[in-house]
Image (cartoon, rainbow, N blue to C red; front, top):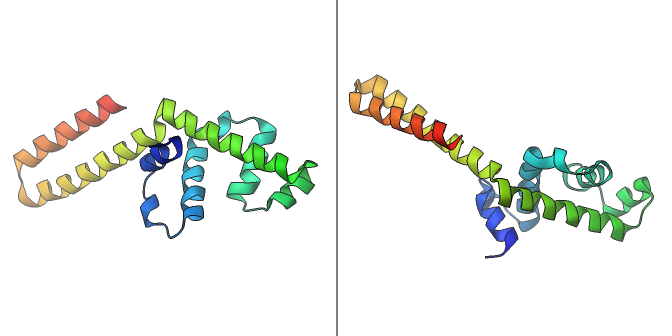
Length: 135
């Protein structure tokens, strides 16, 4: 499995998106939310314009005073850097697991309130402990 596929597998809910471009934009947007501040100022602006603001390479090139190839290269380098940050730090993966644990805790809590099940409360305690260890 290549770098792009490994990272994509860790970004939540991309399978529900209709086309490859939309999946990639979603993936990069999530990665940008977590790691965008680590990108350099000029490259960060180019990446935002292309991925988040949906400007064309030509529009960005005109605004930045560089070639379309320069814009393309900057976007590609930023995308690679964001994926490498996730591969090393796994913040998106941890966040996704934490969200799942919290959703499980909520569901079990509601059931425990309805049924008065002490076993369900113990299950909540176990999930909470696991969540705290992962964070």
